Length: 326
Ligand SMILES: NC(=O)c1ccc[n+]([C@@H]2O[C@H](COP(=O)([O-])OP(=O)(O)OC[C@H]3O[C@@H](n4cnc5c(N)ncnc54)[C@H](OP(=O)(O)O)[C@@H]3O)[C@@H](O)[C@H]2O)c1
Image (tube, rainbow, N blue to C red; front, side):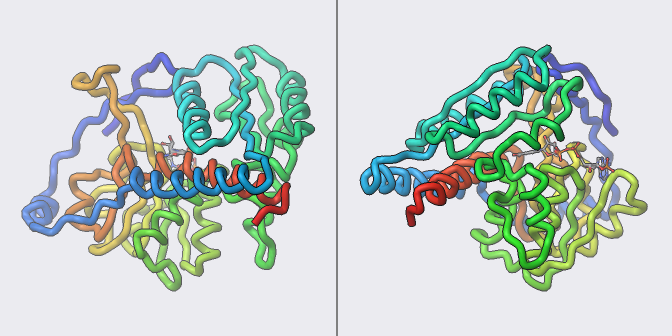
């Protein structure tokens, strides 16, 4: 049961009313077994440290470093925080970052002009437009201006199309789904031949996650807001990737015993014990899921840190491609 409240950042703050446990779930809770926690934070740190090493090697060998440009529109507090985290991560890895900040009421043309100048700048190898944009702006029109070779978020329709088509390779894979697959691989989870369920079908997470899992030869089902009996479909899965943004959507009894669960959901939930009055919750009812799943990502500390690591990785790859540096 959920109730939406306002949040100064512009996102919805949700009050979660806990479900009473059913008898079967209580029995599961009594079970000693708990899932292995997939520590996204430490895996991401390892990746970021390897990227920093590669950036140093590039600088020593050819005197160049990768560069990332960020376009931030408006004053959303959550977007400002995400952008600050990304630019700080660049700094730590030795990647140059530049930013264009535009007001809430800016025009598409102003964003496209900023994009065009970053497209032309040879010291910029990756460009991101922080989403969501204010409602009056047409995302499609803006992403069409973004140079395919610098689309490190992988949102350009050609990058997405190439990801979907057999025999083609996209220049960049969207960071969050790429991070999910990396977590599975680095945690030793076999994907080939497994049944996977992706909850959510957005352009930035659900859709590319399902395409990537297929590329790794999983049999993929997609659950969305109109899916009938999502728990039955999810219970078939060996791997569950969930990106709905609905706290506690996935209950313990939605999971097959031994499933691996990657929780992308990140929703601010009312929490008076926290400094800002809210904490971040995933889509999965964690306390129940750890008693059923074999492995699970926490929220926070699971997928989130991997998204930033993958952004740095895509920016480094882009610079390497530009300078033909291997
Ligand atoms: N950790 C990270 O780095 C990271 C990165 C990106 C996003 N996120 C988080 O991931 C979540 C999803 O983000 P998004 O941008 O993909 O969101 P989105 O664009 O709102 O998409 C949500 C998707 O979930 C589906 N959905 C909504 N309610 C559902 C329900 N009750 N049952 C089944 N499916 C349902 C929707 O189905 P329909 O298509 O039918 O409407 C939609 O496809 C959010 O919490 C976001 O904050 C985290």
